[in-house]
Length: 305
Length: 300
Image (cartoon, rainbow over the protein chains, first blue to last red):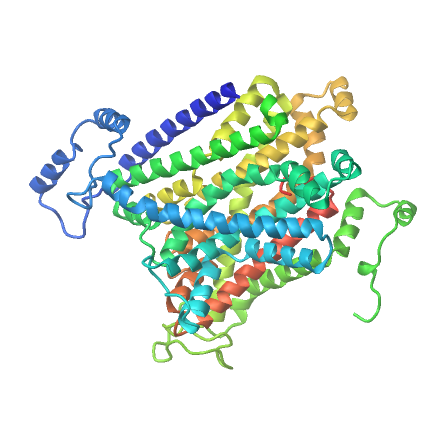
């Protein structure tokens, strides 16, 4: 198990290093820079600006400098917001996106698991069909269609929530529901499929034969095996929720990291783009790793490979 | 449907044996019994035909503005209403559909080509090469690719060819995994051994003998890749990074509609509905094909 974790950790670090390098050089080789504006900036000012941010040094030098400060956990100063460091901006925006992500994941798991379990236990009844219907809607109607429609219905017409912002607890409801619904759909499908497959197996019949209650059979015996596909899906799901928040934060005007990322890319704020990409990549890979570890812990077959 | 048509009648095994039908024919019969898949295929056909032919029949151009009209509600002259510049929404949706479908198909072809070749080579040669290639796929899987597509679109201008390539380059991973698995299991079969014994070259065996047998899963996952590609295109367009005006795609129309939905809800409702309906249909058809071709799913 330790070997498994170590090798996966090393793999993630390698991937992270590749991401940093690829993004760094991609940013430098594209036309236009952070100081390109509509009106021409005098050459002296431009030179001073570049000297201030170390952009006049040779590229390999800049790269090594950046890697060096990264190792100290320093993402450097922002090019667009003078007097603010990337660390400050990230620390400011990340908690918002994380909160949105956690609520959405909660919605997705709660809704997905309960629909999936009900659908598997009451197979081919109205509950099963309802779960399938919700699943198909979640799969085919994109968040950027459901989101605005929900705003229209629940915020503008019914006035239950405010249409945008992130100030009150009630502001969490619509964004989390919309983002969560999209991932509840695959989770309920996977839960249903996984449980149905497990419920036919011999050890479940054995559990029933020795007189375990139906409740115990499902919760103690079937779920552990039946939920494996769901656990495997959690890595991609959290990655999807993180990138899905770009759209949700735009629709609901939430001051989170997703919106900041898109803006910073438009602004060519090199350091902020790099910082955001690294943070997202690290988060996604950490969550993938966590999902793999949980999966290995639940399933001896994976562990032995 | 008052008469029991041939499509809804279950086909028994005996009947198939009697008719001496081919596997492809069996699959076709099974597909025809799946109502959702038939509905999906029908809807797709209607949408595609409308997008191809519709603009030719319409009296309005997609760029034709009538500022004095402004955003008008659906009516007899403009069936689905007009947008704030007085452009006919129906025509814009048909043109947008052309772009969305074109992006969906072309990016899928890119993903399909890379995925099939990569997966087939890894699966066929096996050993060290295979584990190296699949390890690379594992690493790529864990990367936040959507973020890279966004960066690409921001930095290298938002041109539509780049959009095809960028999306295709993201979506090939699943196809590679599926093809590899299939090739690995098929290459151990006796007819492949026979081909080896006959002295055929490895390239010939891979492309003439093995790959045709992987066609089923490839068809199924191609059908299922198209909706996810279209979704990614619309996602980018929604963020303002995809298709640029005056061209439009369904994603662009949904974005514009969402901005104006408070006063002119039809601008969001119609494009949103047609886009979702198309994704529905593609997913239904893909699921139907999967059942008909009896492909073991890795999805559920």
